[in-house]
Image (cartoon, rainbow, N blue to C red; front, side, top):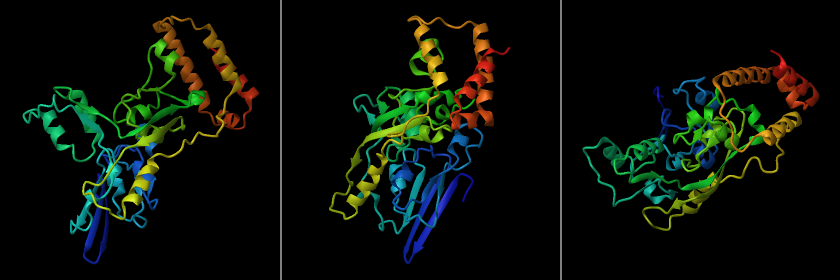
Length: 335
């Protein structure tokens, strides 16, 4: 293992397989975990990494060397080239004989100038063969002719559990914002945006449904529901016996919603107060003054401190609504 890489090796007779996991390139999406046929991949401390509690040298994944079968499915589905395969002799496993995800970008060839004197163009020409979503995002922003854009082979929706957003601390956490490789998550700032979105929001036009946000949220407030995935046939077109198995494993990306059939916990006192506030909001929402903003931030800090209290957490867990209501009222009204 090197400081930024975890290397697994398997040798049998004349075949040598090596799988390299690049810690810094990993975005924490867990697509590799979903498709792994032997359940050799587990998630690491992604919420702590996304919040900056642990630094970027901490692996977002844990790989069980004893379970790994070196099938290289992880390398096929990784959207940011965090896995590299190295097989000797090279003709023992040829990935062109296997199905794969469709590419994560589209190019308007009529606009593309392929200017090798331009650094962005050079990067674009070199990163097309292997998925590299972070670099794709940079190229999309800086492409001189705007011919390059991200296009995900995965379709779906991002579900933010709004009834549970009282748990969210967008100022102190920012895990979803920090981890998103395409900057699709943002914190609403104006009163109109807060009214529309709540504490956090996702611009799904920029999202490619990788799931890193879901894995990063310490309070399980985000769910990425994938509905479609585009799988490419092998580049070498023959009737290979492993094709069906690979397609079935790649389709595991389309797992069912975790929130289906589960009742979300609601706190009546908060729901009641929110309803009152919503009824009093006028169509044109005035902006807060600096003094009011300061008071609101102070009140938010007090409430967040209260909600971090073990006593309060136990009351929420045990649904002791009366005690919780009194404590919240006391916190809001005291000077």
